[in-house]
Image (cartoon, rainbow, N blue to C red; front, side, top):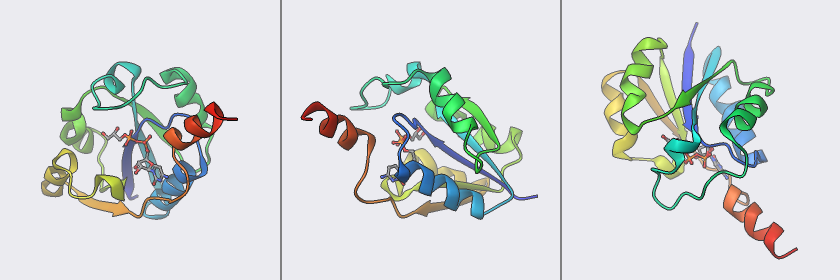
Length: 133
Ligand code: C2G
């Protein structure tokens, strides 16, 4: 059974997120999402606090049929341990992370694939659109 892992904040869940999760699931049999905690999001440069709490974002992800498990992402450095402990075959991220040192080192531990980001939607775009409604 091929086990796939991806990471993200998944705030204000939108169709770009869903397309990423669907393609990630299609690459294996079991999809795990490392979901950024509210505290971890504070460490991400330029990241606004999430609209939804970790628990709400986790509940929403767990309701998606492509997602088999959600685990907390609390640090930048947990990924190698996650790949080992969760017996991961492939890590998948959207192309905005392509080449990032946050992920490239995982090539020594598992397959790593970046999928084209979905153009035309993003959490920040949704926030901006709603602000000027
Ligand atoms: N994504 C996408 N298309 C969009 C928006 C997002 O394919 N229009 C992808 C991103 O590339 C990412 C996933 O959806 O793979 C989740 O996006 P975010 O919640 O914005 O994730 P991010 O804040 O980048 O957190 O350690 C890695 C971080 O936790 C990633």
